[in-house]
Length: 266
Ligand SMILES: [Mg+2]
Image (cartoon, rainbow, N blue to C red; front, side, top):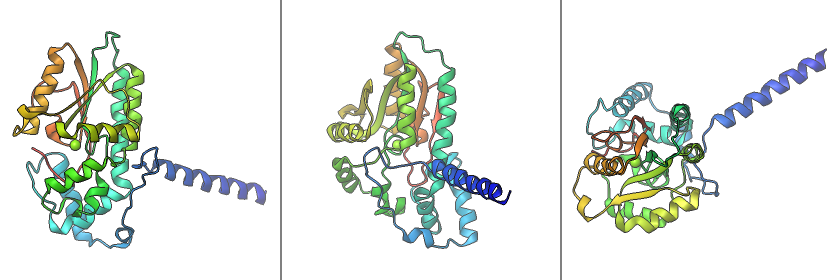
């Protein structure tokens, strides 16, 4: 009897460990580009008052209650680092993707090839956490030149949950469009990066061309969605980490906001 109890307890422990490991979303791609996360952050104690405030601050920026914001509050830098490199960020994306997936499966894809889903790229399909890790997780003023150098490396890992959802949409018959604030001159590096981590067969990749420079992201992205609508596509869903990926005109029937407490794009 005692040995049976022992086996049951062992099974329960094994099951628990498996559930925990499976609930942790992998940011690293199918290749072995694991992120060089800073182990120091794991042991850093965030004062309780700061943790509480920063959690509320994060909720306000995610819901857009905060409106436009420029930098992470100084007291929240450690909090954002812990969020982005720990389990919570992965879990938040995973839950959002589950809702998106449930919704996508309810759509009767017509078969005419005009059922579309639009994805943003940065912090939606690809993770720039390795870049922001050495740039203060958004606490530093954005440096376009150094970010462009990072983009040129084409080494951003996939957000693994997004990659799974991307593939699922294609299996369901959706046409996938990529709509990014990156510029045309970054097309090669962007395509190389996407392909390297497993994204395939997108219908079209929109980048900012000469006519799009200086436009607010919400306007530029709305215009591109409008082009798709004018071509007869129905945009059933749109996924992005910024409200400017999702709002404006020609909005998707359903918009999925992914978390990003590191930066805000109008
Ligand atoms: Mg983005």
